[in-house]
Image 1: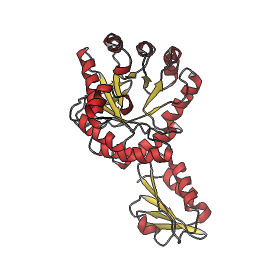
Image 2: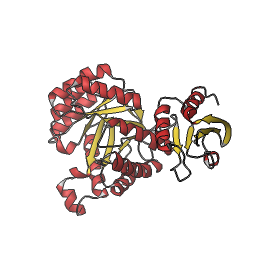
Image 3: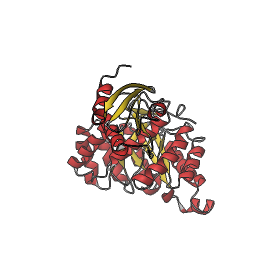
Image 4: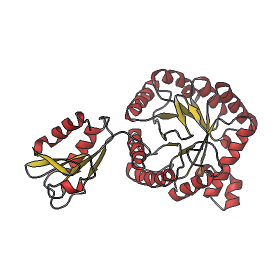
Length: 351
């Protein structure tokens, strides 16, 4: 089942599934009970393009903090719960827009039922989350270890449990740090599950390794039409997760808006600080609301030709460079003015 066919689920003000745009999520790394720090981080993530935020709720104080946090943010908040079903109930009562649980680790059926009943009372979705590290012993024995099939069976068992309790306001996530296992698991569950899928590579690593693993894994999954929300999990500043998620979606044609910056890899003909210039351009265009491609090229010899597929670009040279549109040279520009001329063109863009 592709994202066009999954059940539509409402998370606060955001709809997912049923062909709605893939939503970008992140997770705070503050202590949730520190309301000020958590709010400030969420507001920064909102500004960067985060559409749904998840917060860890390990204590009752954290659950109760949700009420104050919700008053000051503008995107849906998901409460992440493990082990204590009472925290899930408290999070819902304090305004969480969705809860994330693994029904296998919050106690017996009566406790799961209590959480489901509270979610039903407030009409908020439950995200059923299963990670490769949380597989039950019988499944590990059945499949001879952690496998995609085991992950999917575990998730679907929990989905059916909640369905038996009379609730189908569900989102499902299945994650592994093994990229190919994660891909296979999503391919399998998409054939069985009518609910929206939250997609991510768990414990993917630092900004460098995490971006590579997430780009490969999410790229394959999303390209097949699978996945309704995504998170690029990185060990680092959550703002980096949003940048990466936006670019992954834009690269796959699943997101419009935002300037895409392309630049050449440099060579012996490069006569300017292209690396510095490209980074400056990327930072400069971050808040300009255009849906175009900008090229930053290292020399005036190949620059115009190589920038042909970009809407606009600059190419550097000794003392002066070129302003280029659609591969055509528009004018020569002094080297120190390349950035300002490009910015002026973008701010006055009307094509």
